[in-house]
Amino acid sequence: MTRKTDILIIGGGMAGLTCALEIPEKYSVTILSKIQLPTGSTFLAQGGLAAVTSEDDSFENHLKDTQKAGAGMVDEVVAQKIISTGPELVNTLSRWGIALEGSNGDGGGMEGGHSFRRVLHYFDQTGRFISEHLGEECRKRSNITIIENAFAINLISASREALSLLQKGCDRCLGAYVLMGEDVVTFLARETVLATGGAGKTYRYTSNQDSSTGDGIAMAFRAGLPVRNMEFYQFHPTCLYHPDKRNFLITEALRGEGAKLINEAGKRFMEYYDPERMELAPRDVVARAIDSEMKHFGTDHMLLDATHLSRSFLEEYFPEVTSGVMSVGIRPWEDPIPIVPAAHYCVGGVVAGTDGSTEMSGLRVIGEAASTGFHGANRLGSNSLLEAGVMGLLCARSITDHLPGRITGVTVRDWSFGRAEPLEESVLVDHSWASLRSVMWDYVGIVKTDKRLRRALKLLDVLAEEVEEDYWTLLPTMEQLELRNLTTVARVIVRSALKRRESVGLHYLVDCPYTSHIKTDTVLKINM
Ligand code: FAD
Ligand code: SIN
Image 1 (cartoon, protein in one colour):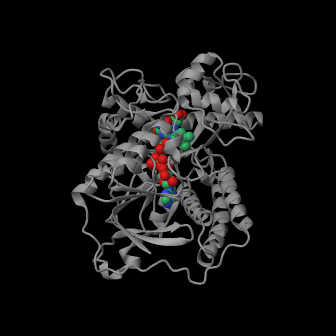
Image 2: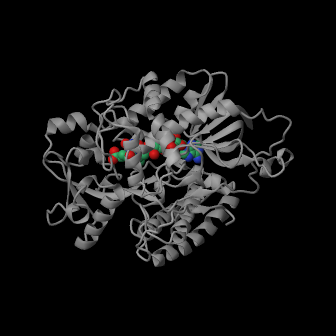
Image 3: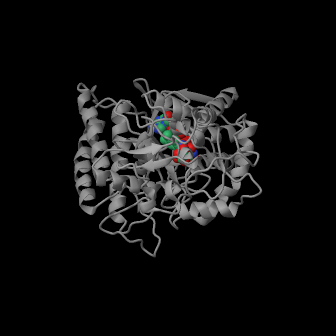
C-alpha cells in the first residue's frame, strides 16, 4: 500500500510537532509516531527551555555559557542563530497556548552552567505541558494527520528504490517504509523530516523512554548520511536509584535550588572536584565526580540532599520529582534521595543545518537526532528543547521556501517480505537487547579506556551479524527493528570513541587524558 503526503514528519516530540505547526495549512503534513502521543523525551523534560527573555540577560551571556559547557567545540554561528531565535520560539509557543514561567523576563529557573536564571518552565512538568499542548494544537489543524503506532523502518531513496529518478550525483529522499500492524506501508513525500529523538536505550541505565532507540540516526546512517560526534553521550548526574523504578530524572533545577550531593561518608564531595561551581558544575564534571565517588566507596549510588527545602515548597515547585520519589517511599524534605548517573542525551547525530537540511535533498533531520554543532562536546542543560523548537520552526520555513515538486511517474517498489518467517523465540531478541545495553554500560560509559572500547566493538560486531540475519529472515516487529537500530548506533558510538584521541567534554578516555589544541569533529559514514 502507498500513501502520499506533502511533508512526512517522523516523530511527534518538540521538534516534529513544532515543525508541523509552522508549515502553512495549504500543505498536507503527516506525523508518524511509533507510540501514542504525547511521547518522547520531550514529554519527560522537567527543568525547562533556556532562552533569553530578561533585559538583564543577553544573547552573548547565553552564548558564552553554551560555549563553556561545550568545551570550546560549539559552532558559534549555529549557536548564535539558535540562541537569538529563542525569544521568537517562546512567543510562538505562547501563541499556541504554552506560556512558560519566566517568559516575561523574570521567574526563570537556574541550572548548572547557566550564569543567569533563564530556564523557562512549567513547574517541573515542562515537557508534559509542552507535549500535550503541541499535540492538541496539531489535532486542530485540518492539514495535519497524526498516525500513532506507526514505526518508520527505512528511508526510501531514489538511488535504491527509484533509480529512474536519480539525477547525476544527487540522491533524493522520497519517503519511508513504515510498519503499521503487520503491514509495511510505503509513504511518499515531497520532503521527509526525521525528528526521532535520541538513543538512551543504548545504555542499561537511562533517563529516556523506551522509545529512544536512535531509529532516525540509524536510518540516516544506513542511507549514507554522515553522523557526527557520537562519542559525546551525555549522562545526567542525578537519576533516581531504585531497584523497582525506571531511572526517573531528578531535575537539575533541584540543585539550582541548593540540593547537595553527598557521599557514603556523609560528605559534600563536589568540593574535591569543582569547588567553585560545586553541584552546578557542567554535567560531565558532576557525572564523573559521582562515578569516581561510587568507585571509591564501592557503592552503586550517591545521595542528593534537598532536605533544606520544605515539603510545601517541594510539592508546589517540584510536583513531578516529589510524587515520583514518594511513590517509592522517599520523603524528600526528610530523606536524601539515592541517585545514579544515567544516559540522557545524544549530543551527536546526523549532520544537519539549523533548518534540518542534510546532504540528501528531500531529507531533513531536526531535534535530538541531528548534530548542528550547537552543543559542542557537552550540552548545556535546557538547551535541547530550545534547539528542537527552533529547528522545528526554521525547518518548516525552509521547507515552505524550497519544497521540491510532487513525485509523479515514478515507481517505488513496495516492501518485500520475501520468505520471512515469524520470530518464534522472543528470548533471542530480548537477550540481545540486554547484552547490548550491558556492553555499552560496562565498557562505553562515563569513563572510557581503549581496551574496553575495543572489547565492546568485538562483542557488538558479533551481535550485529546476528541482528542482520534476523532482519533478512524474520517478519518485521518493532522490537527487532529497534534492536537493529540500537546496534547500529552503539557501533557508531564505539567507533567514534575510538577515533577521538583526546579527552574533551563528555568524552573522557583514560588512555588520552589531555585535550587536543586542534578541534576536530568525528564524522562516520556507512562505508568508511
Ligand atoms: P523526542 O521528544 O524524543 O521525540 C521523538 C519522537 O520520535 C517520538 O514521538 C517517538 O515516538 C518518535 N519516533 C522515534 N523513532 C520512531 C520511528 N522509527 N518511527 C516513528 N516514530 C518514531 N531538555 C531540555 O532542554 N530541558 C529539559 O528540561 C530536559 N529534560 C529532560 C528530561 C528527561 C527525562 C529527558 C529524557 C530529556 C530531557 N531533555 C531536556 C532533553 C529533551 O527533552 C530532548 O532532547 C528533546 O525533547 C528531544 O525532542 P525531539 O523532538 O528531538 O525528540
Ligand atoms: C533537568 O531537568 O535536569 C534536565 C534538563 C536537561 O536535560 O536539559
